[in-house]
Length: 156
Image 1 (tube, rainbow, N blue to C red):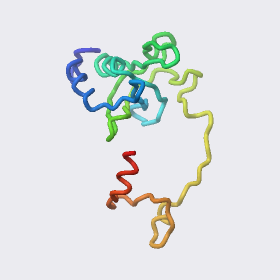
Image 2 (cartoon, rainbow, N blue to C red):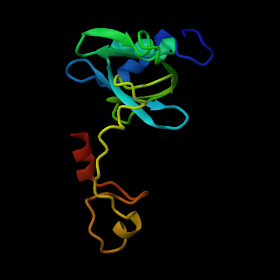
Image 3 (cartoon, one colour):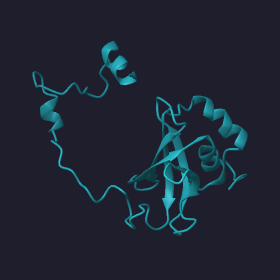
C-alpha cells in the first residue's frame, strides 16, 4: 500500500522511470520471483502506469496485451502477489519483482508457469569446461575480463 514504511512514493517511482527502457510497444518485461525461495513464478508485461502501481501499491499490476487493460494478479482468482522487493536489470529493460505468492501464479492453476514443459539442454561440468585447453561456448569464468566485442554483442 502507498505510504508503507520504506516503500516508494509515486514521485520516487516516477524518477526511476527515467532509467527504464520500454520496448517499441511501451512495455517492460517483468519477471516474477518468489521472494524467499527465489523460484521464478511467471513473466508479465508492464507499461509505465502498471510499473508505478506495482512500485507504490504493494501488489503486482500488469498490462494485459490481449485484453488491452490493467490487471492485478489475484483480483478475480484470489491468487495475489504481494511485492517484497524489486530491481531493474543492468540494461533497464527487465524488471525483477520479488513477491509473496498466495495460491497459484500461473493462469493454468499451477504454482509456476515454468513447470509443464521441462527441457533437457546440454549441461556442462563447469570444472571440466574451465580447464586449460577446454573448448567452451564463449562463457567466461567468474572474475575474468569482458572483451569489447562481447560487450558490443550483449548491448545489441
